[in-house]
Amino acid sequence: MTMLNQVPVVQAEMLIRKPVKEVFEAFTDPAITTKFWFTKSSGRLEAGKHVRWDWEMYGVWDNVYVEEIQPNKLIRIKSSDNTIVEWTFTPRTDNQTFVTITNTGFAGNGDEIVKQAIDAMGGYTIVLCGLKALLEHNVVLDLVSDKAPDAHM
Image (cartoon, rainbow, N blue to C red; front, side, top):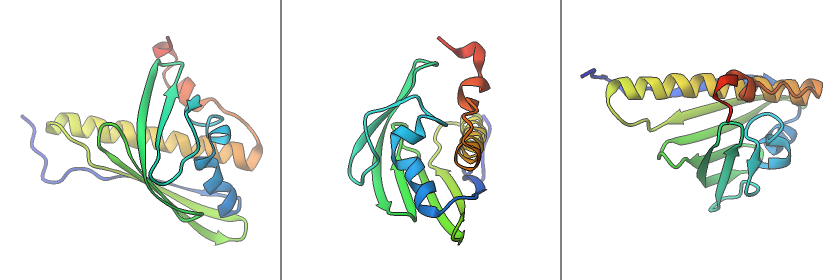
């Protein structure tokens, strides 16, 4: 059995050349988020609300609980696997936002925890790249779908 001295904390970051309000809205409004991440959502992110996200091409979904929303500053959710995901939005200029996504709370044996952390790091990096292409260049890259084309249903 593999032992870890510390459970990994995943962090993915990206500068998006758009105002913080627009970048924040892209994560709270499923009409925008479905263009770069999941394919379907049961609703907008609001504090105290449960929301279902679907990745229809893979036949998977997650029910997330929105623990906290600070408009244009912070989103914190708890996933159905009890991991916590937090987005922070830091304006750098009027037209630049630095987004940090932090994922914590991985559970299982050492190998399982490492696999979850690596998957999360790759996934959130792809999400940020897709967001950047959409907001800065109005291009939908289909990165999440194209990451594992053989896994499609």
